[in-house]
Image 1 (cartoon, rainbow, N blue to C red):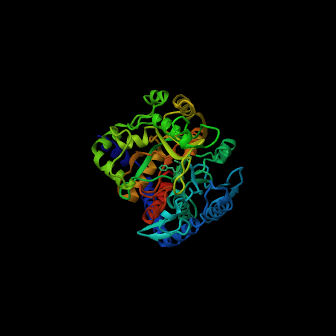
Image 2 (image 1 turned 45 degrees about the vertical axis):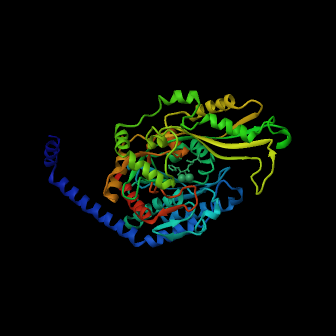
Image 3 (image 1 turned 90 degrees about the vertical axis):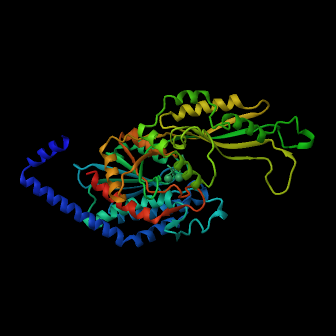
Length: 488
Ligand code: BES
Ligand code: MN
Ligand code: MN
């Protein structure tokens, strides 16, 4: 019925219109062939340019690398210009600089804001790298370097897509604004402050973020939610000074053990986080969709096997009665990043440490308010601290999660672009990682966020031997080039 009606309407359009459509279609195909050729012809150069950028150690959390972070900002500034963007500027902030550029081609067309980050994670443990993290190496079809996938490779693929349009068609088919930050990996608030103070500068109809993995090289996906984060430091102290463990062991408080007791209570072997307010609030936070439930049910075994493979483990832990993708995308987690205290040198030393420190974060499901979670967590630490110790919780950083609404034309355009490049429609998936500024764009600018990334699950983000597949790099450029047309 529906098809017939559409046909009937189509047949009533004037022949002039029909001709226009045919011409448009031909022009469209012509542009695409040109874009494809341009991308393929220049691909080696694109890889060379990526190699250059990856050689700059822009580790934002290390004060010693401050100069290199600025150098990476200046390097990418040139690329914004090469892509044909105007007003390319490095914006100094109290932290690391922002990089901005734009191309406003026509006020009647939509404006796409593009976000990415040029800073990278630290590289330790260095001895685990097969080739040095800032000497990019190409092997097995991937480029290995810190920042390859997160996020330099993905920032560049977007810029190269823009460049391809500029060089083949003279200009991009939509209005573009690009903003890149240099402190995403170190929880800096420069971008948040700047965007909050200058919302009109970033006003746009949608924001595209390529800073996530897709399901696999043969199965594209678009991300529909990210978790928020509460990052904390728990300091525990016992005696006023370190003690001989023979003389005092048995009666002295031992803060390393105290932390073990506390942390062991907050999350037990069943993976359930023992924060009552959090458990209560979970009932009302985002629920999986019917399609997700079906997918998890039908592919449970394969999903578990794939997770085991990429992590290099034989079984999963935590809330094992739940689907693992629910645990990663929709459940909170409490993770201990490190514990410092006592003696861990070579040999032995019989000491009872006076102090210990743990770095602990909670990932927060997209529907929950991380400020509240931080409060509940602080209270739970207080309530569960063992007697005889002094415990202090410092919240270092809070980032909001995000649930994406797939019901908009920009999301549908991303679906079509992926379909065309990969020959297969994307699945909608959730990610457990966090991109705090994504929620900010959604709230302050009130625009849809499109999380279309081209990383792969085994890219070793934040770990030794980070890599980015060159085929993903190439397809990423092509997909974004298509996306820019699809949103007009
Ligand atoms: N690109 C990641 C976020 C990410 C990773 C999303 C994997 C989805 C899957 C980003 O660079 C990142 O690492 N974010 C940090 C934020 C934190 C420092 C506030 C994170 O998730 O730990
Ligand atoms: Mn990232
Ligand atoms: Mn990261």
